Length: 125
Image 1: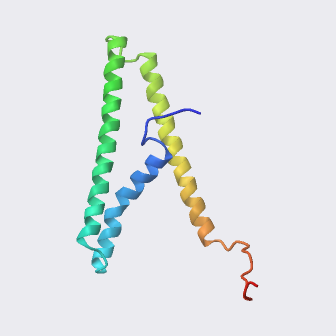
Image 2: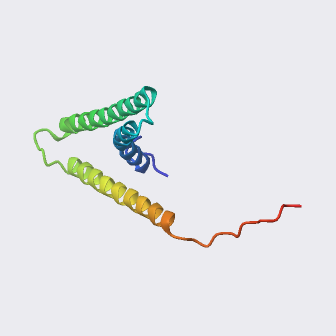
Image 3: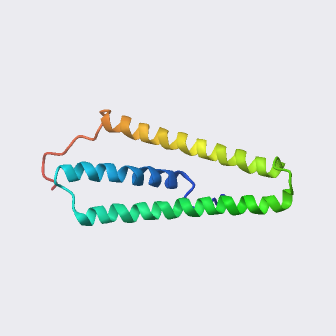
């Protein structure tokens, strides 16, 4: 089992997607007069959490680049730096593909009639 940076996995990507879509959904609810100031406050607090997560991830990437700059000197094509860049790209692409597959799979299962257990109409004795 490996540990990664919090917020960079599938859960973080799903959270990012949900938080980005929250204001649009809340806007539609506002137009239907089903929203409130408290709900908008919750949307705002989640957006602030997302901004904090992205800021921390950016800070970690910047700090890692600075640390690697010390070891690589003036050579910007250092193999370790290239390895980190490639690994990050592969991880991001993999996360997006897995999330897309999960979302499409859930949507297909939602609209596909599955064999369901028959409902009991007689009272349980």
